[in-house]
Length: 205
Length: 324
Image 1 (cartoon, rainbow over the protein chains, first blue to last red):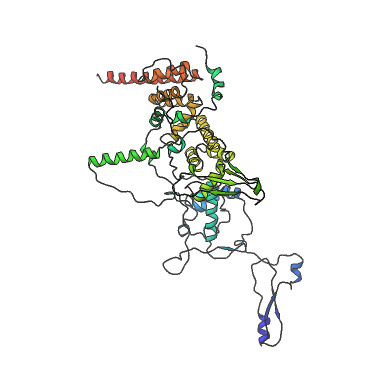
Image 2: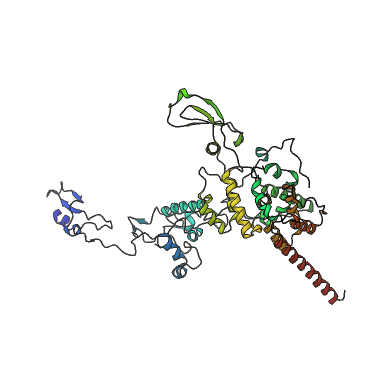
């Protein structure tokens, strides 16, 4: 009976690109049975090069979108109908148990190039929003209009990985001069640079 | 009077070795520059986007004396904010060898840098020496000393590696968007005023401002004084004078001509004794004797005089219409 149970046990269909592991029963004795997965045992169909996995196209994030496309998208009609004039993170609600959200947002919405959650964050849900130092229109939406600071993930609700990407992109944009901010004030001590000698002629009109 | 244009174009490059520092720091020049900079409190005390925590505004009831005191404080603070970055000559490379010890050649295949980290020393007075692999003990070059100072006493707003925005292509991109104050502030924070890089960046910015005639963007900022000083030093004040005339700021025009006379003490218009209070007369004297683009300036003066005349005429007409 135990063996029949094991036979009806289906291999887990994973969303990974690696070939499916096969179930192997070593011994008929139920005590010494062990579940062995071996990537070496491939079925012939995959060896011929056919794709045996069905990737959900709505959750597939293996395609890398170039920055220029993202910049064009933000100026497009499609973006305007989706988001209007609000920042992209405005219309989004986090799902959590209880009245108070967890202090940190999730680590990442995308695992192994597929969306791994039912409610992805504002950046991950739209694959045409690319956080890059050149994409200034998108970066400005994540910078506070009151003091120029990068908005916290608790306000924008993006996942941790995207927040780090955002921070890097904003710092790079500031370095290249694409984003401006107010530089800390540099005070000069004139005596360090010039000491008037007694021989200097006083300039008169 | 022979046209001075042909000879003056060569004269601009003649005084390359002349040190602007004694002229810039002299009292008369400083008063003129501070006067023309202006103190527009709305611009000086504007909202700053520097990631600092914001506090809600305070509303207070004050007596007249208290209000006067607060205004004095505000003026003192504004003069601090409008402190002009020094205009200096390009610095010379340091070549001060303290000792030669060929006996220790090859002791290491890298240099050793020794920095004096005594508390309270200004960066420029700090001793930084380098022991080269060939045994020479020399004083560190300007770049090495600045790097060490930044590592041991980091300044806010300064990075170890200069930001990419100071490279040519990115700089032109930023200037096209008109962000002059941002670039100049960043340059002040990153470089010393006698650094060749700082001088290159500031000259590029000032030329761009002059080309686009956007002097108002820098008015009431700390950079307006050095901008006017640079333009006057290089005899490029025509566009500035025209734009000031169009805004009908005669006193500012006269101040700039006076600054020109202070910097270029050998100019011809100085010989003519003009009453300092007659701003237009002073300007006309400059245009006649020292200007490089006489026609444009004369046209601008004529246009200004026309406008003044028309306005007077209009006021008089209104008065007669009202029966006064």
